[in-house]
Length: 396
Image (cartoon, rainbow, N blue to C red; front, side, top):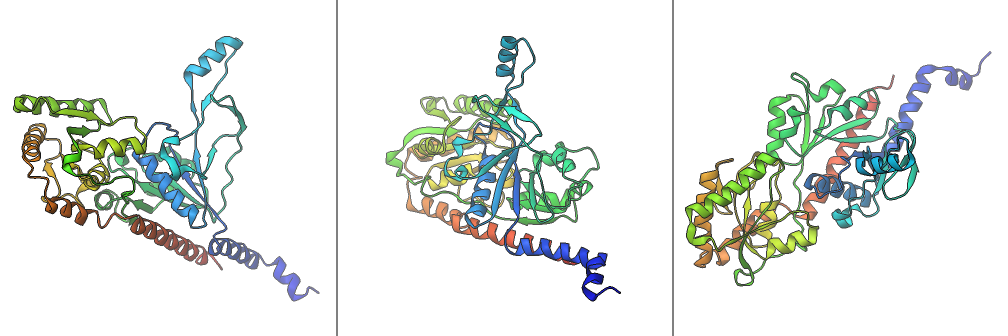
């Protein structure tokens, strides 16, 4: 005759519930992993910087965070080594985002694969298949449905990290949604992206938060301490680059008297160099038509650098008539005309008034590190509680 204890051990329902309780306990005690999938890019990228900042905030709060990536092949190094050894040899690039600075320090970077990989820094690493448990979270950027599909059958918490509206539908086939891969949780970085997703994918559970502007890095300068130059960032595509230069050339054509005004391209810079060049510029030209949020205008306001730019979807929550010169998105002629208006007002001292900086500060009030950190921690606390509720409902 079996004892009560033996009957309990043989009862599949009891065993099932014990497993679920064990997972819930790990969630309650923060004994789980948060994996961020990251594109293997070693050049400056705003989106990757945002991803690492969020990972750093969570790690500092006691969460176990890992950045996972698929190493990209270094074709030149692979070819040279293959020629030297007279056989096919593959050499890969290690993710090493040193340009991110402090937000990347101490964050674990884990390449994906199941073999030994040779990197172009003369190191090798035995890469193992990623082991993911039901209590773990996987965060996937919005433009990688191939990665979402790979994780579709893994019983963990999957969240889309949406930093751009532009790449969502472009990366999927017609009719597909993230629900095709069992994902309904989305973390959005702007009101504009949230509204867009609600329209194209009704029923998604979206949480959004506001990024912060580092006021220790982006500092205001008096107009008298600045150079009469206009900073700008080139576009992400060849077409966007051509549009940006078209705006500049159209400005010179419309206002030949201002051909002495120099444009300073902010490209391939560290955070510190970027902030320094932006703060010493009197104005900045903003030509990002597809930004999911767009921090450049806010960083410029923090530097008392005046913004003349387009109005992409992501900037709708902070752009207004009192904090910049805003043209309809993609309107080259209108933006060139506004450049001339802003330059004239800048040179005549009309922008060197306390009220101008006061408007900038009013805009920046929402985008503080404290607000960003608290929002992220609150969101992940909600995710934990929601995951616990999901698992509790699975008990029998």
